[in-house]
Image 1 (tube, rainbow, N blue to C red):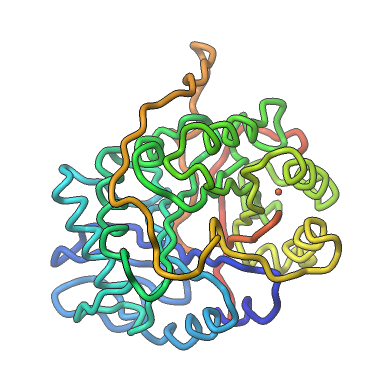
Image 2: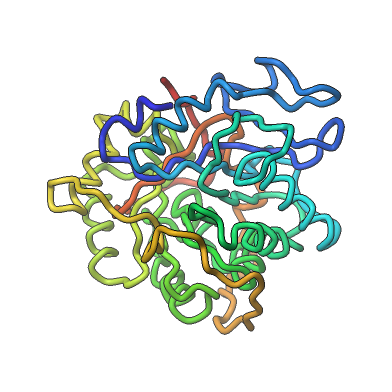
Length: 350
């Protein structure tokens, strides 16, 4: 993984995915494709949770270079969700103990503390995610490092699975997937403006950053990929027009790298051709977090009205489980696309 941290192009790496919340023995399951997952490595006793602690050194190398490394929850083949607030809070505690600042006896990635979590929720109930986020925020209060919580909603607003959490908990950034949908950058109903308005007027964190999510190559999505010239134009326009614009998220690191360094090209566009260090999402200070433990916000934006015969693409397969994802700072995409198909991915390479 540290291979992708060797230059200043990439700033945020969400490791995907923790895709089952409650597996054998009550423990979650992680699958990082051919790097570490169900078919590889030692399992923790009484569970199917794989010991991926060999990744600790790579994670530390990335963090030492100023990269934010988080773990992404969900994906299209996930088994996720909560039946109560108590269950959600307990899972927040488990995540803290396993991957963040806790001292649990089970640490799938070793003793390194990741920098936060990312929610790519695409199945199950939307209920109680705010309780989980607020629990983690409570645990992180006064910590010696800052912890980030992000989400990767689909572009249709509001997102079916995560909108309730976004309106009732403090998030640092949203990596909106502007592809595989009618509102993607390649479509006439591209709606970054809607997400920008939500960020500035409705989000509990009025300084939340909105990232423009794009496929890293034509192999990374069913539709919505655009060439670098088009992506550069759309990204630069979003950077100039929308106060909440935070950058570009690419799915995923491997395909972007192999696509003539698509990642570096878009970073150069948004930094004037000279990549420079950027602060992480909403990072006015890099010390201990000082965010509210709980928040309650009444929705203020109208729900998008669609034709009666519109077939919601979120009902079909979207993100495949095995892979790492990539968060890029200060970057974004547009061009015609066919009907949605499942988004594919490649394995993250060392």
